[in-house]
Length: 395
Image 1 (tube, rainbow, N blue to C red):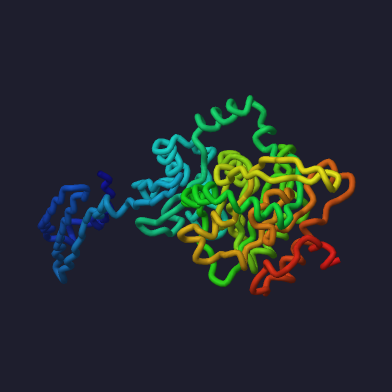
Image 2: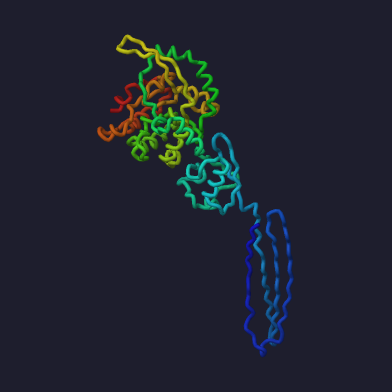
């Protein structure tokens, strides 16, 4: 229990026997004690009468404790993480770091790996900021991003300790044609099974009404994970591309990598906290499935191939996202055309981004793509547009 006492102390005036006949002091004290996290309140009234030959002066001095209700000095912060909600009761005088330490105890996510969204508007609060200074109310809701250390270690071990291998989705590519689509449609059972798991999509921000959806791949599309320098791994014009696209599109991320690594990289790159755009949701490789297609070689030989696909129906059938997005208003940007196999009319293929090539030849893909996306943003049905030659349309 915290008690703060404020009092007023008055020194008696300097007196001499010639001016004062008597000093009379009386004291009344009222005391109220309340238990259950409330401090004791005591009020003391002191009346001093100073009698002189010519006049009398009466002064009243009050000494009162300041009442502090401990319940009012704390708030509950509701934290969503990994599909669960955690309620953190914390003092308003605590810091953001104190909040992270409590969350670390609850989730086993180290404080240094935590990224907290929604704790304040605009710029992310620093660890030393006081909770009360954030002007949040009781039962305020936030989202925490972060992976338990044990899971990260296990994931690295599973991939043979080679971090690059986790991100390596640059395999063969091909452009699906109509014959293959009719064959792939037979994979309904796998698609339905994946739709059943659509609630595994990590929602970060609510969709906005009347916006189209832009689904972005990560590695070799807007980033190159092979460079460990945060700024170097970004494709040129990335931030401008995201800021401009956000005016007309909600942005979703779907990467053929593990969620743990997606989360780490998006956090390091600041893509989840940029005040100029918001990421609506994130999807990983667990929401992809394998289909069988046939690749034509030299115009005649057909080779049977199995590969993963990103079926946009998983998004369109989601209980919440499906209210906003459909085949008509969704674009999927990827460096691998084979990922469009289930939804070829929604795919926008971009050449793969490799840092070493960009340094040598330059890279303006996202600069041009920004213009293209803006040019078709008012189309009612984007599947009626042939996106295969998109770059020629704006050059």
